[in-house]
Length: 282
Length: 255
Image 1 (cartoon, rainbow over the protein chains, first blue to last red):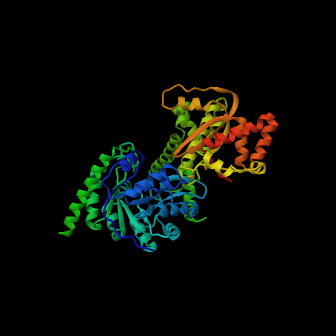
Image 2: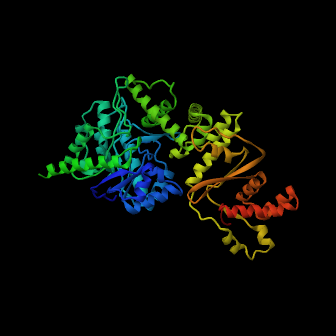
Image 3: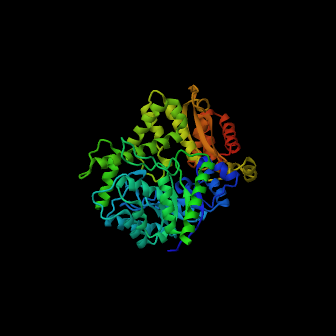
């Protein structure tokens, strides 16, 4: 499999409400990430817009439906469409999540948690091998946030991710917010999680917001619908000091604010990373 | 079945069914986590249906629409990898749920067809000029054998209500829907003009002629059918229809 060179830059997810900003103006980002499935269509306006954005910015294809954790294997029609899109757009890289979304009968359209077992690891690695071979490229996989763990778990999520990367040669998309959310929900140490990953294989970082737990609901929810919280900024600074320069983006999926607000958050990521990298160099 | 497959099947069943008992060994903490996944599943799919069937929601009202969407998802849980197809069959669900208000299913069909046309394959329409260039030296036999390929995403359906008025009246929230029963049943044709899905209402005879040609019938066969229905005027009528299909940009090529 091909290797993916590090790309140090700061980007945003392309959302419909910001199409005009990206098409008509100059948005100061180094890359744009899009949800692959929104553009895995036959034709029409979405593809035309993506091609126009691609003419201005490097693009990352970030999927939510590959379902590498599915015991029933991957959907070959899905892979064929993703391959067609990747050939058309020539992305910086293609990514998806460590999760499962479907059985052979139904699709949840949600990123569901995997039991962290050796059997699940074998399934994930087989599916990633199949995806990378079909697409003809090495992929990135993102750590999920989760709301439950399974009684049959045999390893930590970071050990699972590390083994997955080692066996398949895939790279990692580290969602710092997801680590924070899962750490809160499952009581592990967020820094221990990140330190347990092969950080030299992290090619991208996601930063996002979440809905805190309440007295009535003792679970943090990964809503991606608000600004990045202070604890996640601190964890990002700690992480970048260990990964070195890495592509970073603000990922907002809901409650999308005006573009300027996201650019302000991206500026903060730049400042934090600069500070952290300077300290690392000293 | 592997342990992982069994776990995923049981998890999916729990996701789809609120009443399902928790798997063995699960605690209240697991139940709280599962509730979040259940809520995510439902809200994502209902939101997807809302986005696709915006006018249908305005027609029946938010609460009624939410119940119809929930019913649809219970009866037809999604199986496709794309959320865009979650609304497949929703028009039929509306037909079942609103038997006394057939305009609901007609409008849902229209919104679904526009949704599909929006991302259908790109294709340039065959212009009237382009057609005349090819057909300029057609003899009688060539005309009789003429077959057409239509734009990808073109769909049609017979309807009993004036969908143009209903569509316009539901442009924005809060307006009263104009539900007008047509004096004669008609056909509605949906296709994409450039990047914009559009529709027109035509006679049922034209709808039948178009369906026949989409199914591979020749122009000659369509003319014969129209003559059988309308007498000698059928030939002129076929010409009018062909001109409309070309002028509206519904035709992609001479097949």
